Amino acid sequence: MIKTNRQLLGIPICFTLLVVWFAWSAYHAAPPLAAENLRGAGLSLSAAIEQLAVVDSSFGSLARYTTPDIAYFALIDREGTVRFHTNPGLIGQPFSDADRKSFPDGISEGRELLGTGEEVYLLRTRIHPDHDDYLLVLALHTYRADQVIRRARTGVTVVSALTAALWGLTALVLFMRRREERHHREMQRREELARLGEMGAVMAHEIRNPLAGIKGFAQLVKSADSLEKAGRYAEKIVSQSLRMEALVNDLLAFARDDQGERHTTDLSIVIEDCIALIRPEAASRQVQIEVEAASQVKACVDVDRVVQMLLNLMKNAIQAMPDGGALKIELRQQSGSACILVSDTGVGIPPAHLPHIFDPFWTSKATGTGLGLALCRKVAEEHGGSLTVESSVGISTEFVVTLPSSEVAREKTCQQPY
Image (cartoon, rainbow, N blue to C red; front, side, top):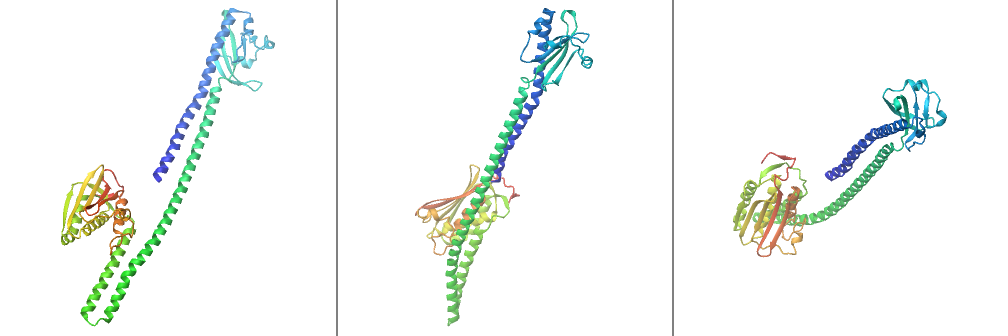
């Protein structure tokens, strides 16, 4: 869940970084681009004005020259008199001394405010029609050139709005996921409480039977007329006590959280240890054990839990062969997983029972607790694996344990090789 949330956050973060870079680049590139456009237009227009002044020394053709970009332009002679102005009323008027001092030898340019409040691009340059020297003052409207700046600002606004919308959508998705997670946890809690109630009822039933037996045999011991009878009754009490102890142990093992240390382990060694423990029971029931275990098949596991799982599977297999048979254990590497197969030649599992054999407290045995196979599946799933079964009545049953190999599942909590 945390990993998924990080991935969800990664999308708007990457998008935000991308659009911020794009908007910043576009916004900062816009003013120089607008200035370059104005400068190019100003130089082109000044060249055209100079050419018209060369052709018509009376400047009559300049009065008819206009473009949408020109706010005004004027020609000032060396004495500072306005020889031409787009406003005819200013022709012949002196140019201010302050402006004259700012006349450049080359080109002077910049933005200035007119009396009307409009900002214009003002270009000052020298022109030389008919070997005369004039100062050309050219004012251009900046509206069209500044369109690129306005577009950049609009782009920044749109991008900011889209980024805000994306973050809002991400926040909504995360909120919905958190609410769904809380709902899921609540449903799990209710299911656990319901299962706990069911388990409590089953436990009460399972414990009540041996307790009743212990009580009855204890009363018989009290009234026994010989030590021999009392001894037999005491053996029954011990047997019932062991049954309750096995039930409690299975319940504790099933309820235990997976908190043991995991080690990178050669599973063939684990199987050998399990077979050494189970061999006496197999021999007493005329069960032959066959082993095909590839070496160096490693997985990151809690060894005690895996041994508990395999012993349960092997004991179930032996108990499924009351007249003897063959217990076969295989270990092999398959598609990045370690596969352990435990098969027998016993009575098999009826098809009607197969959907229930992994349910807690479900058992077809008269003295079983119904937690063995449920515990086996839980151990396999704790390790990121699975436990499956195939069975044919009267022929065989095969349990397949799949565990991620150490090369595929690199657990952070995994210790040194076992």
